[in-house]
Length: 169
Image (cartoon, rainbow, N blue to C red):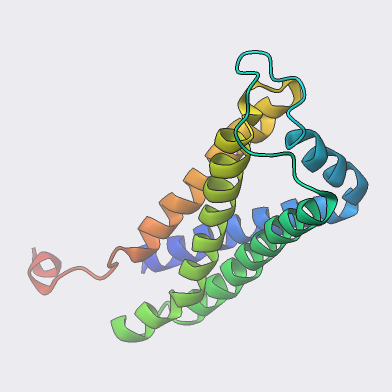
């Protein structure tokens, strides 16, 4: 039962975090757009001045922002929904709890895709965000948030019920 409760709590925590991030992004839409433009502009790249990815047109920046916001919202909503489903199934049989984890696992997958795929893969590696003065926070933060979601996804994937032999020991 302890693992079932912890799995629900971990999923809820990551889900809530993702919803806070997307809410802050939407509340600061102009600043978010300016940061996306700055990130992809090749500005302030002193250490490695050549960036292989092109400066994108404004419509592509809007698509990138929508993708980030959608993944954060999906991670948040599915993480919380999955946490609720696991909480409701915490006293159920193993098969019921196994299926209750589904939405939380998909939510954590969205978080990993966002923070490790889009942020670390595209922004940090592709646009060299790591060397921009304003890039240290998102570079470090996206690594940490992605790791938190990945650790939660791994934890969700582990069986929580002890085998009969271990239970009798």
